[in-house]
Image (cartoon, rainbow over all chains, first blue to last red; front, side, top):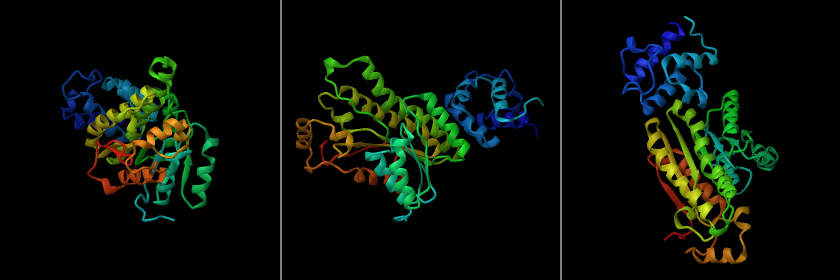
Length: 81
Length: 250
């Protein structure tokens, strides 16, 4: 599984949404499931999935699925595939 | 070395650990088997307590930074990640007390006191709670003060900042309970530390007159409460502001 696929699964499972809806343009607060409470749950799940600890600034900046991939690339993860 | 190992294997972070209540907490946590990350503004100020704890075989790590500077907190967090140390317990003890009568309060003083006491608590909690959220367990202990609930002439700024800590504790407790992280506050009354030693004799006597047990508390007594809140003995306690004041507030 690629890192992109892993991340999409984390989003789908944590937010309880269909994986087909996890696309780059999926934005924070654009759906009821991705609210501030679940945003933190998402961060915890991402940390656990990739064994990282996201910076506080990145937690705040993670405004979409696409942005998440961009930010997470800093943690030696490859989202080109 | 361990008294009864109540914190055996736990990674603990104590801010403001160079002296007073913070040093007493660090001492007791180390004696109970915890790894202790010692924080103060400067490394030099931590040397005595670090040497003392190392001498009894404790694992200690020094992490000096300015708790009033959020960028410094972020850098310190990265250092913890680099060390592979994810705290299970956070004691937000670092604080400053500056007395000024209401009519003489200046914005710079308000900024300085709130930046350290209240904002520092928020930012350090924000940073270190992340480690605990990942582990789905943790205990955060904030140092409020009886002045925050009871008030004292000349301590509008300090008292306000300590009242803020009570509010920070309650909301943090509600938010972090989902991650099995407990958040409680200790509200000490008059404790015999360097901080309170700086009070004038008049103010010291005025304060002692309000204490039913007729004596100042000891840092070690506050440390025992911190140990209780850090350990599993308080596993069902969260969102509480617990006074330790010899009956000052009754």
